[in-house]
Length: 198
Image (cartoon, rainbow, N blue to C red; front, top):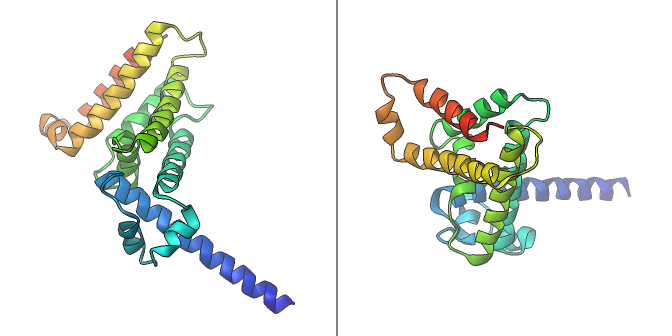
């Protein structure tokens, strides 16, 4: 009986490890190539796993994408919007994520969150995730009623973050600030503070 329990525990551990590998591969491939261009076979190949296991653990590409977004959303929320953090600390964390070296785990998370999927249901999931990001930005400036003006400014702040990520991918922001490496981050913090002020 104990031996059977041990085998079951080992099998469960292997299954969880395989699932985690597939999820990690999916996050990177969705971020780099987009939802539409990434196939289940691509994900299985990258994780060095049989493609049948992708469907077994996640049922569909859409559900796998949803899990990737949920995981990223949770991580970013914990890292950027800690409850005890001051407004300046939150804005500095957002800026440091935007300015993270390309192709790092941090940069890929933002790219996944901001990249259009090309699939109606996947896009709905992504936009819901972004809506949560906007709601948290609205709290950065203080716990006040949400006015149309604050809502617009939170959307503009998100647009600034998305635009900065995309411009960095093209290398354009680095060209502007190569003589002042801290300039981008400080300007981003200042602009976000202005947009999200009470």
